[in-house]
Amino acid sequence: MIIIKKHIAKSIGFFICINLLIISSLYSQKDKNVDSIIRASTKEMYINPDKAIGIGNTILNESGNNIDSKIKGYKLISDAYSSKRDYEKSLEYTMKANQLLDKTNNELLKINIINKIGIQYHQLKIYDKSILYLDQAEQLIRNYPIPDSIYTYLGSNYIVRGFIYKEKFNCEIAIDFFDKGIEVLLKSKSNSALSPISIAKYNKGNCYILMLNNVLAIDNFKQSYQYAKKVNASSLEGFALKGLAQVYTLEGKFSEAIPILENALLISSKVNDLILNQELYKGLSENYLALNQWDNFKKYNFLYLNTQKLIKERERKSVCESLNMKETELSANIKKEKFNYNLLIIAFSIIFIFFSFFSVLFFRNRGKIIINLKEQINSLQSLK
Image (cartoon, rainbow, N blue to C red; front, side, top):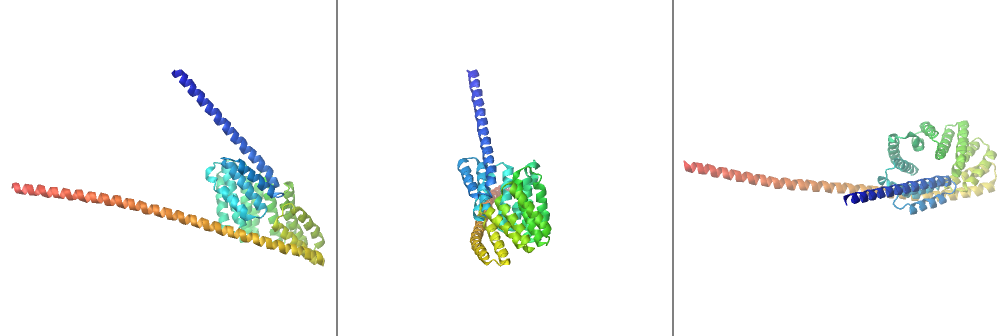
């Protein structure tokens, strides 16, 4: 009978192990499928962000209890909204991903999301918060044991710092960080590194315009375009061409700038990037004005002003979202401090009650001892 029970126990144990292995294999396979879907969707990010958003929602709906898949789904949707310059929505989905980070052991995923939050705060021009999250992400990156896996994250981290230092300090400091970011990204074997390299090159081009070095500006804009083209990043291609046309405009080469801007506008029509469209309309209106082509000037100037109005409306929404977030965070901190304060009061109250109770006991016992001693003394004296 004992032998049979042992045999049944072993069979049950074997069955449980097999099931755990199957479940683990299924989760692993599901994660791989999600990763491959996201890699494919990343290619759509700058071409058709709405399609990427739809794919992200599908991942969320089918993720079940898989926390990592949910985080990746939120991240994909957030990135797509960033591509559309809808920072309000992008922030909303980033914070949803952030709320799940405590439930995952995937350190790369944590690095990815925290880096993204740093980028998000930069986009909202809340630089102190941006640096705070970028520092957190960099610390996690430094502690990660496999360097080859974090080149894209570290490179992007440096590039975002370059944006901040460009806006807060000067281009010389910014270019140092852009170069550090590019150097790290070039070590990566992933195509995902090409888009941030394109962005860094574009921003270096803008810095060289400010530094009155048109030769290096043109060189960086051309490189930015080539990197963007490798991954079909339409929005980034458009920005690189816009930068190149800007140099030609500054040099008085208006007839050369116009076809470049028109090509950029054709490329940008795939993504409907309001910021890019605004810059292209502005560039075209200025160049046509310089050539005294009034009809074309009026056409593009109208489109420029209309797009500018749409951007301001969207920015107001983003600012409101940022203020609401700060208010929510402040409210949460106040509640936390209030809770901690109440706990402290309760703890002191309990200590005080115990102290008072034991003090009463101590003095009561001491009083009894004194009475007993007095009675013993009186008893001894009566014997005398």
